[in-house]
Length: 474
Image (tube, rainbow, N blue to C red; front, top):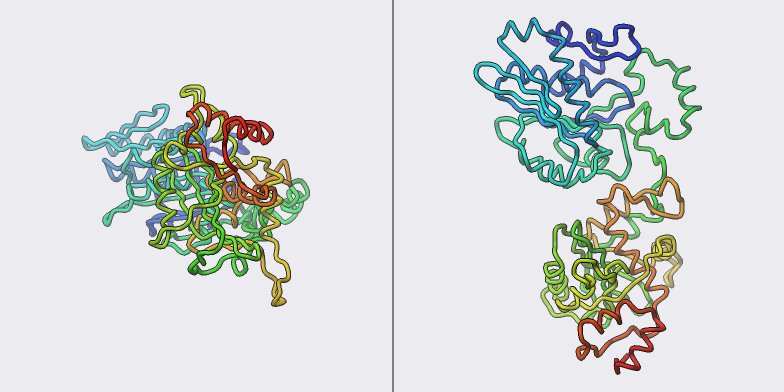
């Protein structure tokens, strides 16, 4: 605290001097002490509370007094990453006497600041959030700014955590205002080793009740997200969860052995970023049970097909094949480079897909119908769709995906990491309600690849015509 109060400056846009000596508020002093005393720190804060400045000053202290240390900062964009470097450089430029007296010299570059002392280099390096950002470094301190608003947050954390998880060192400083449905929210509300510190809107002693009421009138309900007075207020359902029907106590059940006379379907969302694949069993009363989940990124078509084949042997026994393997229309579009669709690629690997609809509003409507509770014969209120507890990614996503800010009839498409599983289930729901009496069951092995490609891409009317011409049994 002596270092901070005597040698650190920051930018105060409301001050005539702009760059002024830092006199921390009580909440900021507490933040310094938390970072000092804890390896994993999570700050949920109101806007413009200066916690990022606090973190940067702590990092400056660490690099000055521990030659050879490295700080890695992650921001939501390249501009934000560069801004952290600029701020860090400004902090050092405001304490020349201290640095020179200790034989410390520094150089400010575009994406990093390098300090030289005792023949060693210390580095403050800042990156924009990207899928590979967490794999390219080993750090003494990992600073994650506006964590809830970073793309690929889950992938970055999975790959970055091992780089600081050392028995003798490594520290994390995670800072953000709230955004629902994100990894940051999950870490804040979950059981883990983070020291969690909430910084209220009134941590700034200049903010009065009158100022808050004026801000509330200007922002409306968004004031709870931007300027929360408590952690509970920050976590209020601002903007709305999309699946308000979803209830863990009603929709999630413990796994059981699926009777062999039930109908089996599968539905998936696929891209190189994620394969989200689900097996759904339907009983005689048309109740649907999601009983198997594949949720894995980075798979080419043949690898995805292998995992789907293995799912056919779920529970260690050979299951009858799904009556339909449902997939979105984009998998049936021909690629410019290869001239064939991903659906054909799956077909070549023994997985014959059925095209579902990608009408988002209709699909969500039908999925909500499946989730809606209704009175059954026993008098209980039960939904038509239930999910095995083992399908944890689907459960997490249904809990966290939000309403689209511009279209209340659609689900938000960001953060993208929580959209894959609901999309896969949506393709089943919309097909289930619109499915024909008989699904095409195909004797198509005599078709050439180009014929099969044309069949998959055809409309329903064209399919009937091709079935007649090419003698496809249905």
